[in-house]
Image (cartoon, rainbow, N blue to C red):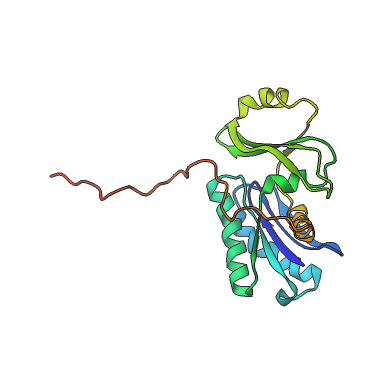
Length: 206
């Protein structure tokens, strides 16, 4: 049983189980209130599922791609919750969760803000029904979407306004059940944050 959290686009929290399926989920496509709602969503999911923290086997973190400010909220929440519960963190690429369960080639696109998009392409699922990513995640100008779609004929376009934590968690369960590796525990920001730390002390002149 897993608690899954993703804030790569909107905010989504779910509790899932490989055998029982989705026990609870809360989601919002608001891209600015991750920090305000994530704690409420986690509590609501535990209340609805009727389970204790001790029942979990791990915490799934959606690793993006996503804008720096929003994505780090979910990853930090997942890591903090896992640390407090003494459970492992399971990193999963957020786009893979969107493609999970789609039985045809697919092109996943999410909003990267600043008139840019994140995109990944997938071939048919493998024999275990797991996503087969063929390119990405990548960052592109929103105006380039048409050419990206043209370069992937036969692919179903999915423009996700939020990444549901339910398939994120179920994908993690399926990867584990099939002996597959999880994603690297590295956030996929793909773009530098708006604010950076200066390389050295500010020079003062008088």
